[in-house]
Length: 358
Image 1: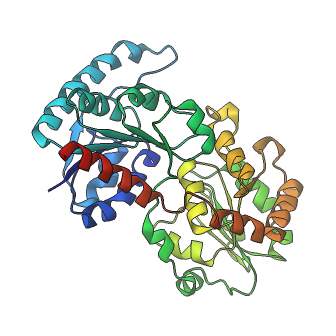
Image 2: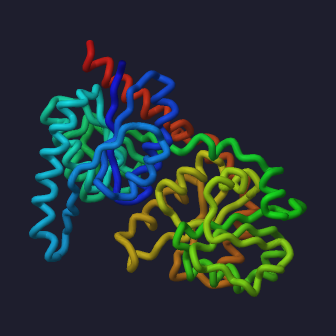
């Protein structure tokens, strides 16, 4: 039986693409194992997946001064030792890494044991963990054409990000029943992430009367960010966060407002949902969302409104433009070479396994 070790952690974005690969890997007869940190989010997210999970020591490598910089390298070394022992025991045919600092010792240990590795980089420019891992990788999958110039020649593959296939199976009728909306107007879905976005929420709510003349609205506003004064507003529903019903809400929605996290925008691409992307500002991040958003805009998949320009009027104008030009966005997404990222990545894994065993 073919055996694969998946690794990645630290944030949900370093784990959910691994989960998206699981059904196809199992279909192809892979014995799947996961290496993550002892108590990271990856452990929680993998609990329901019914595959063996192994924890290793994990430390963060920082570009800035922090007292933990003195202790974390020892955690990384311990993690490398633990990863080496696990890989010697499991003897996988291939390792697939989604990044995050816990993945670095796994990837380097795999290289030393001559186990082929594929890395996936979600953002436009590789983060520090993947930069450290890339020399040990056979192939590096990425989401953006621009990323290829940042990677070693011959290693880069434009794959897109694996998304959960159940997102493609949403039911519009179920969403109408769940939300209580009428479905007589176009539906606007607003996604602020699990924590929500105060600036996006405020801008949307400042123009609700105007928006509701044109759209029905589903607003995922984030934990603790419901506005109780708007609960009786006809055509507007708000939720802190949605999990199981998200696929149905996507099926009902015509256009989307969202931040520009790499996994989210790849979901919109796969679902062919025109999106107005409002990237997290460079002041609050390393700027990867801005790069992600403008790459998708350049390819004709989305439009972009910078957070610094976000006001009620600018938001309304951008949304109307998105709606009026929605067909051109859908057509561009339909022609994308990243339409089936799971098959692209699994094909690369299969090639490496057959080369190793030949």
